[in-house]
Image 1 (tube, one colour):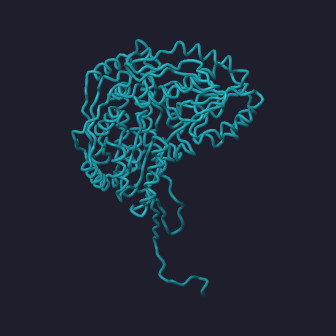
Image 2 (cartoon, one colour):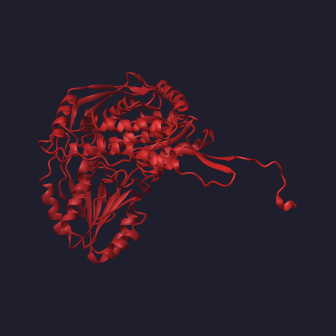
Length: 540
């Protein structure tokens, strides 16, 4: 077909409410019940074929940790070798496909997810990662749909960018995929990230080896099956659950490693970067390294702020999805004049918050992801009770008898350098430092230098001069910066997501900036009538 493709213009997928009496609530409840009765055996998928090792890892519901929902086959050395071979073979064919044909696969995946697969992904995310219906809807449905649709749109625009012509010649850019395979490593907390980290490089023509988080294996497995249903050819994305160290050791040791697409801890990301650096002489090309890591996200409140909007933003920003978001509000700086009112409003709201099994649509929180996380958070809370100058204002309870439950907790620390003001906790704990009203400027400087991270942050003020000043001081303190809003909830196509400093490479997932990392452009100059004489006019 001789035609210029016109990718359908994307719009953000509408978020269903799941309010009582809605059809989506009934459909999701039925799917939750169906999946609760399953124990899914999850194989690796390599070159389009299921691969089983018999080395099984159990996946349980975080909020009902005795309820097994899946068993995952951990890939072995032979499987990793097969995945590399499959990716190399698939690359030859997939990289030659026209962009519109590749895009069609992801656009079909988006429509399948918006329709018949919606509650499959939502229910598996709720059961496996303990998200409420609304949080799952935002993540595993809407955000992933948006990634697929907007990525295709952004890629089309990027590919249309071409160099200037000149008389007698034609200049072009050929946006080649990387030479080799991309290694995608995805986290437990966002199903959409599980779909996007392998999907974005694949859209640009790359073959991908995808290692999902074991605790998100169920929802991620369904994404892989959805890719297959959408027509993704075998081997373009290879799904390999397994031991992180063993998988990385094999893949980073392969000369064909062309890139890493990562979301996870700062420590692991730095280890991967070091390992790549140690092997630079070994690779066919310099691997592209793209990562989003940790955060210690701030909320800085000026005395001109509205106490009610601040209180609501802190509740939602700190406690939604049990604070297990890289963007979650984790430290807040509140003026002494507003602290009593904000505190009282927060405590009153927290007393109404319900926590428990996410299948109960009345619960605002589920459980933290696993025992390791529970133990870590409990340790911080136990220590806070002993430390001077630290007050647990509300919450602080923990219960692991049925699930890994940590209450939404509000902590006040007199010392702005207290460990809970500095450490990434990744749980439903917000630590507050109260400052004198006349020390706003000094407090902004404190916000900027307290943490090595720079992922998200927010300020609250009604005074425009104050807002302008904070913007200047905190320019490098956050890659996603919010004014009078919580520091969470970035929407694809509206707020490209990513941070700097220790929070990652800031390549902005869901934007052309990220997609550009997965191509290696080739400049082509074609001269229509080449010269036939070496001599230039100045020679006479």
